[in-house]
Length: 281
Image (cartoon, rainbow, N blue to C red; front, side, top):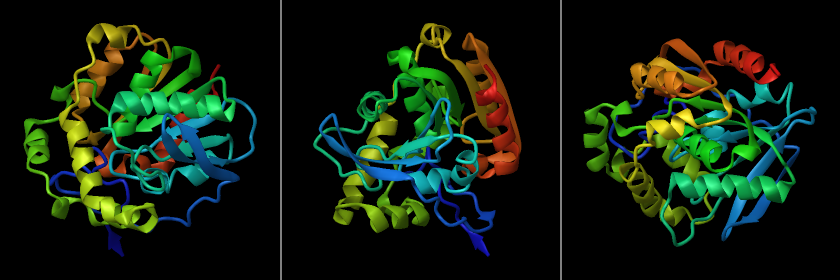
């Protein structure tokens, strides 16, 4: 069966960019050992904790317009085999109700830090995919004491990391163009499903408001970082290489024959790379 996989066009979740199709079906959702709602910066933030392995926990930051399941549904069951995984749904996404403030990468980084404090986690590894990668970079810059290692997958640090056609598409984005799987995921779990149009518009506004991160900030990012990109990603591979060159403690993984939607679906390639990177001292 051919389906539009969850997480497809997470950067472009609310745009009219075409969404890649990948063959396959998602596994059953991973069962969380703990889940609930944390009082974080005026939000009732939905979170899940998976696995009971010791060591440094791994925080997952999902893509724009997405949920834990739509970004990490294939990857999560493999990650929890060897480590404790913390995942949450950002302001207005998934189970987390919206509040009267814009979506922003900076605020989501602060929400991540506050959630870790509420959970009593002093330090974590962080894996951000797509818009979650932007949040991961912000977290590493704003709260270096919280981050041991970063994985930044399919994320830009400057607007020119995406082609002009993407930005043109985003400026013309309509709710009708939002991928059907992401609509269904939102409507299936959102506390206020009637907010779908507002959700779409705020996702678009967050992208259009994105400001470049200066090169000197990237050079100052202390955490050891794995930069991941697909060779056919929305984010230009050349841009990922530039980020890799700027970061002082960086590694690079380019996934072959992989578009943006498929990056977190490439379990066979991605899991060994993550285990090797995160498992090293």
